[in-house]
Image (cartoon, rainbow, N blue to C red):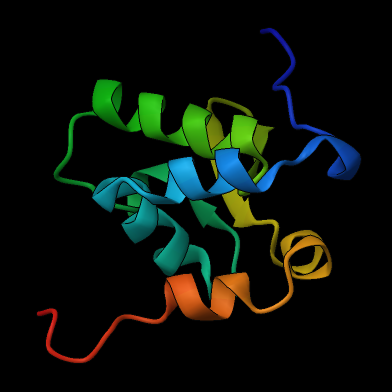
Amino acid sequence: MAALHHPDIDDIELVYVLAALGHPARLQIARALADGVERYCGEIMPDVPKSSMTHHWRALRESGVIRQRRAGRKLYLTLRRDELDALFPGLLDIVLTEPVGTR
């Protein structure tokens, strides 16, 4: 299997982070990872087809929002919270907090 590309912290750009988080499914994925717990990709939005999720994971990974780790045939996801907080202080606090009245 090919190695997964994760941008270095110096290569993460705000415009790509915002674009990745601008999609409702990707925002939901990031919110699911906001507690800092690594999760198996199948746990997040299990009712969405894997082919759709693969696209979203790639967009989040390539923008620098998440890390993916292979373990056998499974992929595990974590939010790059510390790195993003260092680059863009307060951004994740604003973006990942669900506004009142949105449900």
